[in-house]
Image 1 (cartoon, one colour):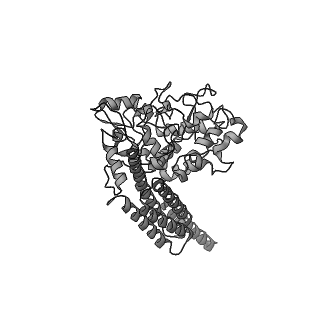
Image 2 (image 1 turned 135 degrees about the vertical axis):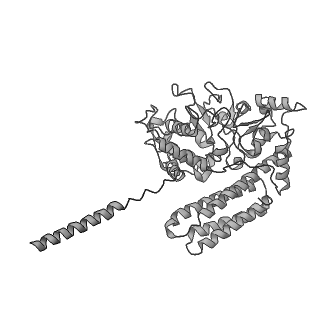
Amino acid sequence: MISKMICSSARLCALAAGLSVLSACKTPPPAPVDPVAKGREIFFNETFGGNGRTCGTCHPAENNFTLDAAFIATLPPDNPLFVAETNAELRKNFENPKLMRQFGLILENLDGFDDLENKFVMRGVPHVLAMRTSVNSKQGPRTGWSGDGAPGDGTLRSFATGAVIQHFTRTLNRVAGVDFRLPTAEELDALEAFTLSLGRQQDLALPLPLKGSVAKRGQEIFLDNRLGKCNLCHANAGASANFGGGNLGNANFNTGVESLPDQPAKLTGEKIPLDDGFGRPGNNTFNTPPLVEAASTGPFFHNNAIETIEGAVAFYSGDSFNKSPAGQVLAASDPQKVGIKLDATQVVAVAAFLRVLNAVESIRQSIELLEAGAQEGSAAREEDKQLLRQAVIKTEDTIRVLEAGGLHPEAVAHLREAEELANKAARSFFGRQSLIMQAIERQRNARAQLVEGF
């Protein structure tokens, strides 16, 4: 009996000692959540209980976070972009499938949902690159094409909420909790963090030491406040206006785009109400987009009216701009009282400059993706392959931008080699690191053809 008691006591002591040890061991805190990674997951995969669309539906990473007709034509019929064609509840007054497929235009009800038949505008999808440098203004945040693309306070967080209400709904009733769920505060924080992480994190400092003679001349014209005047509204080719004695940040201007004759979408005979820009009712002004990313994110302007970067530059020498309020202000500030009058070769030069700027930035992003895809270990293998595929897509994009302007064939040759090496690296396990390093070297060689020591 005594021995049993001793044994039981010993067990109790041992158990107590074990519990004491366990209680002394604190549960390790959960790993901190990366808001950018969380935002990326939400951006591309979260439907918010709606019609199947995500943020990435209209802002796909593989197309520079924007849409154009060529990319739309590659999508399968069941892609959520086409819900107006597949969901009976959304067949009328939600999208115009004809204009979407032909011109990449999306229907927006910026003035409210009380008269869907008549109160809407048709707009292109703005890319969301370099938002960190492109949203702020002295008048408050500028989002969307008119600067009032977000309800409420106009911030990126409000922009995401507005996008869910406008584009994710199951029916035109747009009842929260029924047709969709609204993003939580944490989700909005994560989406904002992810969006702000995309593209450039700071503006360039022009001029750059460019090598190509045509692009170099284009940069001179761009920075000449008596000739191109481009830098006045796009300081350092960004989205900030440096006009009238100070930096205005991302400002709104009436540039006369709505006055363009023969706008492609209007030639179809489809109903397209006047887009009056900022405010309700609008004041015919639209906010300034960044230009570093322009050459690879066309079509151009809020209504996708111009297809090429050359055409977009030429617009500013036409009557629609020079007779607009913005054009008249520029002319009034000129000693000769002249607006913008560039001839054909000058237009090509400015466009070449913007193409090279775009290529330099794309190469930077490609190198960043390649370096991120060079992680060691099999655990990150699938993620690495995705990063390498993104680098390939970005490199193909850079090649198109340069070739379309007949620019820098030597750089293009290096980029083609970089593309092939990145493709091989994505398919390989052994020797992958070496292939990635070689691809990075080719990217740097291409950049060296475009600009000195950059």
